[in-house]
Amino acid sequence: MSNQEKLDTEILIKKAAKQLFFGEGRFKATTQEIADAAGVNRTSINYYFRSRDNLFEIVFQEALQKMDEKHHAILLSDISFKEKLSQWLDDELASAIKYPFLEIYIVSEMQSKCSHLKRKKNDVHLVHQSLDEDLKNEIKAGRIKPISTIQFMINVASLVSFPSCMRQMMMDSFQLTDEEFNQIIKERKQIILDTIFI
Image 1 (cartoon, rainbow, N blue to C red):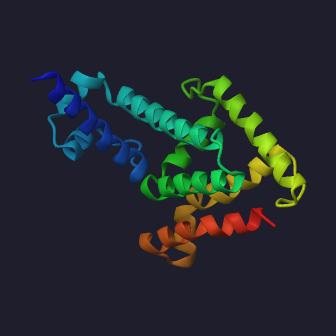
Image 2 (image 1 turned 90 degrees about the horizontal axis):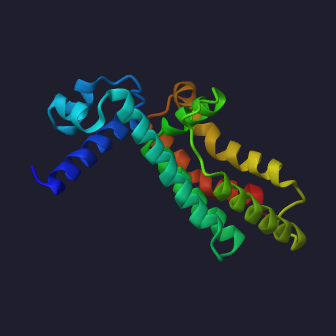
């Protein structure tokens, strides 16, 4: 097997695992189930990733890193604050539809303070600093009501994350199909922007 074929197989396994774990919420999916979803032999997972738990960890860390990189690129760009927020919401809400259980897992891991939840502190600090400056400018210009940066972040995170974290309960309560709930998620962007900006 060539190096390219090995890489393709590894990517295929990770893609299937990500869909099972975060797209379908099957956090306890077995090695065989992952292999079946990827269309590979079960021994391939042990060959490439040593264990199912190690595969889960790799897939989760890569998802978190990709999300952080996208968000940092948007929030540290030179576009207007409203456009930054608009692009960030596009990314977050698209992820909420594609991987509805990723947010739940991230929140649970942060809550349990697991050591494997790795994030680059310097990057996070730069983003917070940039957000603080942008927010102060928006408040000064009269486009956003006065609010502290942390309260602003809590508000936005709540408006974005709550529907995903409560997805199943809300679907059951309002008797919604997946398609109907996904449409509600798509509508969140404009509702959130209208809530934030005067």
